[in-house]
Image 1 (tube, rainbow, N blue to C red):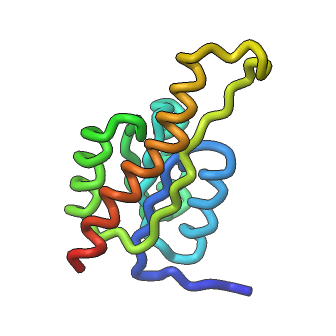
Image 2 (cartoon, rainbow, N blue to C red):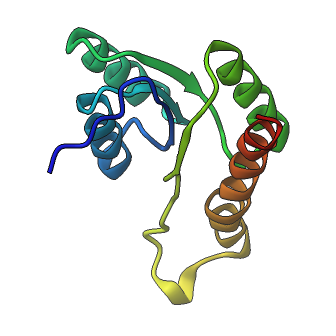
Length: 132
């Protein structure tokens, strides 16, 4: 089945690598304009270049989703380019430390990125969506 997302603006967090990159590519191939948020500067630049060279409309923004103020600022900049129609809240981390050895600081980082980050991005995007 082929889906058409022409005219839609899709924001993908954690979109420079792995699953997020594959999701972003599927939307791009379906005609969507993309904004990719990621914390990995090198992967973000490489993915942006790859997607641009493939003819996809893509904007990349270096973002740590666990920082609410940064998220609010980056969503504002994204919305100024084009309203976000679809949010894929994909950013996440997974510790490789064995369960019994995970320190409090590492666990807190997982919560900050995977839980708080998803909340911060969704809240920031939905504030604009609600106004529309």
